[in-house]
Image (cartoon, rainbow, N blue to C red):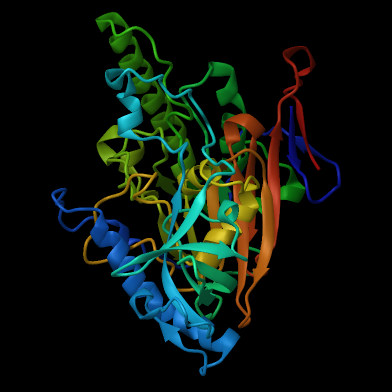
Length: 465
């Protein structure tokens, strides 16, 4: 068995000892996710309200970018103020809407009633016939020109520079997003070299053998598998953030709707939660753990997902080091602001655009100034009508997304000195990897647990690169 820290490049032998107590570093912590928790639940509102609030709130953010890029003398108009014969350049601010023929529709789902052929199942819904439309509070207009329909999604608020042509379409010459708010400098309160571990996709509902790498990780972090040269590294870990899909990583297989099948699926789900409780109990004995719900975890399906209830984890709930948190999640650790999701917004954006790289999509959502722009159109969310909690109102230090196919990272630098560490957290069940984020420097190191074939397993030693 080998434990590998991929970035260091050196080989160390890790001897197996019964237990070594780790005197762990500590630093300040504050949960800033209150806006993602429902104060009241009212599902009788229309979803149109959230788009109106989003446009109203983000208009002020975008106006600063408009003046910065095109100057204060460039006129800003509403769609109602445009004229067909007016060729003067102007700026229009609105919400993008993509007209997509392939997008799922309830009318298409019942197409058999209209004696039409049913739509084939798809995983991507973009096509060359997609059209881009800009909407404000009163009107809408089709966009043509510099803004590609395949690089955006419905729900993004933007400002476009151009004019209305003779066909009643708006010719876009340039455009601008809300981008990242100006950075607020805060003192770093973390000890030198301390780091936060980011992981996702533990998926306890999978096979028993796949749980073994996570057990190795828990043993290493808890001090059961220790090399003298790594004790200083272990004690620098101050927190673990688990970004969703801990109990289950995929949707249950669709089988015939029989009572025995439903009972089997329920039993598998309960067993996965019990096993997760057992592993979390070991982990929370030695370190603080923030547990986010994911797409397939036992929590509400629509965003924001509320914290998983403590009653599901009777063993771990005894420890104050377990923190059930929301998805999306916003917190401050050692003076560094962390903001991120369990990955659903990135997956949904990839389905309805030609953006494929998860890191590129993550950076785009930061530029758009919104955590989940496709909500509520194609990604379900609570019907807010007085606020949109997904708007990025302050510059985070670390912006992450869980349950991605591979580890990716980038240091984003904004036009006003913003520096944001972007992190795509790989699914642990698929890659056996997590991510270490240094709180002092924002440097990122992937940490991987390697498990050879059973015939080559040697429990007497472990190696760390």
